[in-house]
Image: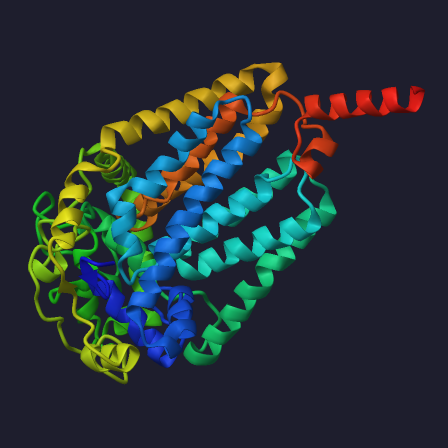
Length: 473
């Protein structure tokens, strides 16, 4: 907070602020994070926004620690501290807390939902409704959250929570999602959470798509890449670059980012993407596998293709520079939106030596890719071993959900959009939880009285003995 005031900027942040200034459903991505910015707009302080995000980061560490102590009590306290350490200390986690991006809010909502569901061995209707609302909010923050709702449903069914709990969860999640879809439809003509599923999948396939093999119809062929296979850039470049084929669809001019996701463009892009996957399934699998392997890279940034100085991507910048201008959201420019929101200078200002301390810290304190791989394999192995032991089935049931969510957040974005190291950052605390619960979770359902009072069953036994002696005397 001292070294970089008021926040660190990346290009997506300008969209979030622009949507918050107009509070509208954005075609490119859901507007949940912009809603948070809108709620905090009366403060006119981006520093207040990142303060709240830093507090969310601390809260996630507390939740991981408390949940490990509660559901993995066989482990010593030090293991709970170790499980919470990555989300508390990882420099990239702290970096995203200091940016105007949706990542921390999304992680906070997911970790809170996991904590609510696993806090007791048997979920109550109130907790079930809270979990459904939290995951719906996560989905409206980042659309990848949509795959987490079926995982919650599966967890409830596996644990035989009952139809009342299941229906309560479904209804609690459906109300905000349905309300947002209706709001979106009132602006854009048809109900949806966003308009980009076809475009994102199309970009995912462009690094390998060979239109000579696919042979698409004429209206889709305009979206075929012109670069030879092997010399093409990463998937996101096909959307955002000035040369993007999305800008060449006849009758659909593009002036802002939202125009790239027009219904007709999205329809054509999605159709071509599906043809590419069906015609070249092995090439698609190769791209996904190669990008998954990138999670094992030692470092997570910076991105060498990003704009220098202001956009030292995913790294605390080492030089000051002016923020760009231009129209990202129809109705106003970047500088206009930032001035309206902050009512003061919004460009990142440095304060040394604190800024230098953060750069040094980020170079040294983070979870490297190979260690993340060990965490992933360890969580899977511990879960499999727990499932194989009959007396440990209760621990396996509890560990299954955070493990499934962690895997989904690692694999899901790579399958449907692109690889980005920020996408799998929320999976780290979830894998820590799954590993800890698998190793130290209960062998049988915890005693109900101990769950309600927070005391240990052995202490309850002593209390009963004292009561018995008192009655005899």
